Length: 95
Image 1 (cartoon, one colour):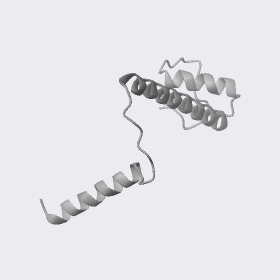
Image 2 (image 1 turned 45 degrees about the horizontal axis):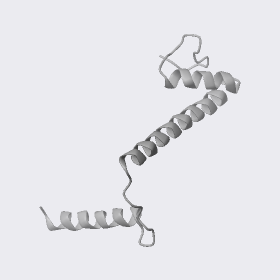
Image 3 (image 1 turned 30 degrees about the vertical axis):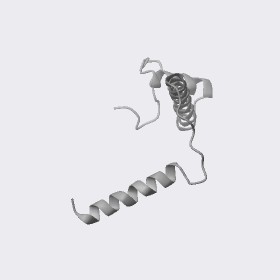
């Protein structure tokens, strides 16, 4: 391996460690398997709600639909059910 690659790699690793764990930030103790599972579940549910929320706002603004209908369309789209009753009406959407 070239020397320049090794030094760049070391610098990147040092920068990554500094960004993830700044010197004054105490590291949390290791979590149990259950705590990690709960954290992943909470993170996943929060992401799901964020995607549905952004989709609702975008559909409401772009299609000029009331928010309950935009929410319905977002949920149908995210769950990939794809009912025919909920389709985009503006030109340029769809294939």
